[in-house]
Length: 187
Image (cartoon, rainbow, N blue to C red; front, top):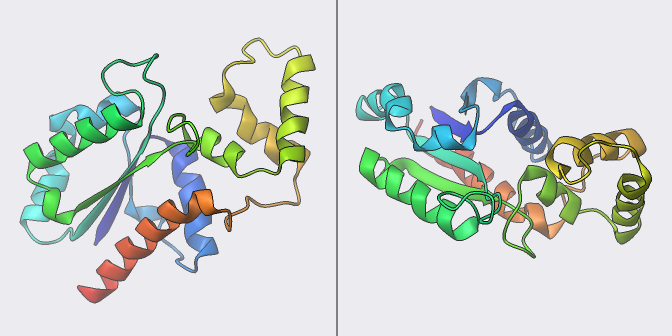
């Protein structure tokens, strides 16, 4: 048994789509949704998970967190801080031998979140179109890319799935394939 520990429902839905794309189906029950990034760092949230690992029922964990931005979160924001803090937590919980981590981000800036990763995989024409739309729209929070970029992409390009073949998705695909390959090896 494996678990993918992620922040929210949007992350789960996206990861399920990517799993389907790489030929891994029916894994919706493998997720643990934390609700927000700060919950990743609450030790009490892992009581059941550590019990399952200790009883040899849970063989592999994949922690999927957004990098976010260091200027917005001096404790967990940005790739380096987030990676450092989650690895310290995993060590403290004694889960290092069964865990892997991916910090979701725009690989150019090493910060951001799922929507930043998705935006980074768009063609320059698509990026320009979305940016132009945001610039001339009356959205109250134009800076909140997390809440609107993905929706704009879906509305503007309803017949085009995400470009899962883009190199920026490779790390996530590799970690997911490793997670499920390891699961098959241990059965």
